[in-house]
Image (tube, rainbow, N blue to C red; front, side, top):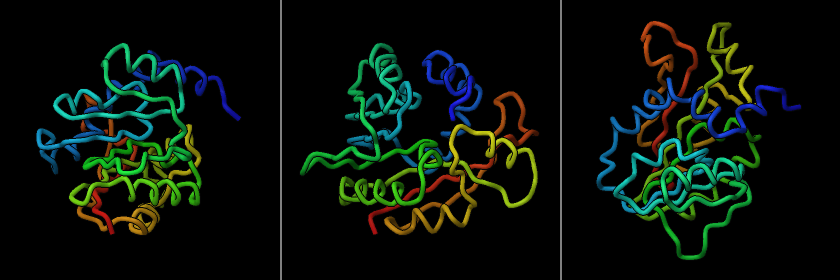
Length: 203
């Protein structure tokens, strides 16, 4: 059942303030492994209030999110193609392809089978030379701050590292599978969350 903090984070300004200390560090592996200036078409799945849209200023961009308040805020701030849509039911129009599909911390909100269905759908939307890029929350195997925070997250499906490898690998060939720590922007000493960046090509 959603709690008070969940409702607060449904508001765009609250979500953006919460994400601000971590957003760039979370996106850093994407920048390290890719030349975004070469990206043609982007599909940003679970885009929130346009958290990463500014990175794709030179690309054709489509962002989808279930929260209409996020989408309204994203349109106002970025002026891009943002659509209210349930990603688990979103069907990419026939013949429409993207060379860069981004999923930022969305899959740990949905169970395995809807995740598989979504990944299969996105595989069909991927251009032949394209890649999917996933940043996801890892559930550490041993008790630690990262495990506690993963359990407290709004998403109920943070997964162990190897579970992410297997789940994502069912639909995509791994080009990069890189675990990384995530903490506050002002401190490199405190790991608050354990993340993984996956770059995959069509299997």
